[in-house]
Length: 115
Length: 114
Image (cartoon, each protein chain N blue to C red):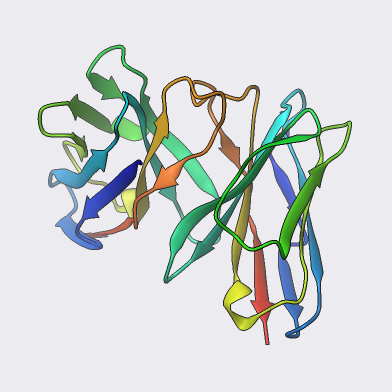
């Protein structure tokens, strides 16, 4: 079975500070891993995904994540937070291959950015 | 290119009624997945359709059903609504049926059951 744990339901940072959102996964087979962002009253937007190529994945809006198999982690980082980064972030896992699109999401982390 | 559209955006229903939600995928996308988002349970997978066939189903009661039409548009139906069905229902479309294909999400339909 697969699962995702996001540590910290709320994270608050100052504008310009490092953003670190934590995600740990559990999967019995090699996973695909994703980070999505959700702004108020909107759907989800893909930030980046890991599909077993490079372990350091760069995404949109300056975000990146590193797949660490030994730690079963896929933490999301951004060197310098911007006010527009305030949103809810979801880590998700899916099976490699599998032939289906089912995503299993973490509970989400709400990021607040203050001046 | 137009994104995923969902109609209606907001809906209020009474317990015991049924509801149908619609999702129009991005042109050319043949896979449509549905998710339920609630504050308590988070984002949960409902089902996925590809070429009019249900390929996978989440752990939801039989009151939740769906279908896909030949133009890839999809509908989901919830019968005998319960208060706990109040949620944001998200639809996502993609080109294919593996997670290698990016899933594009619509804005959702917010269902309130009173």
